[in-house]
Image (tube, rainbow, N blue to C red; front, side, top):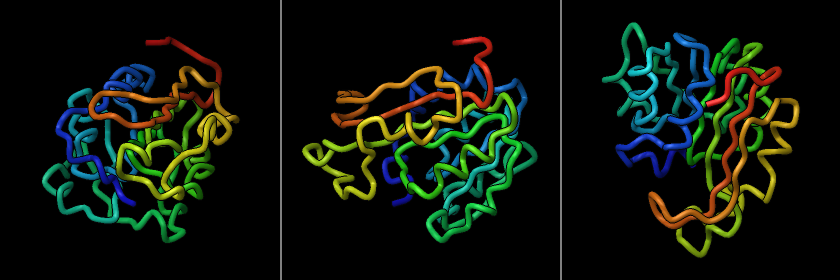
Length: 179
């Protein structure tokens, strides 16, 4: 499942809130970038962006000096192609569990992961409903246990549409300035 619900034009408020933790002007990886809604936000905030998705057709117009667009099927075992040294990694509405350890490894010291996706219980609201694409309770906390958790939420939300979600913001290192 690629960034299925990335069709919404507005950036995630969770994402926007915790971008303040990313080093100004830093290098940020947007995994499963979809149509680029977060790429646009990242560029506006002055970050150097690497946008990765299996279908980059919607991302190509965003490519330029501040944005590298890379076509990678993230579910093909190609996590080694992600590289490393990222000051931030953002992921929304996407889950491929084998990538979770690669995300931790790809962060630079002081780097931030900001992750938000669907969890168990979302079946009653619609897609995704396949358990392969739904986090178990507390799963992001376990996956990012090597990091310093700044914020974590899980449960039902009403906006932008009813869903069961889980989200985390975590640092590679001790907490610094909090938003």
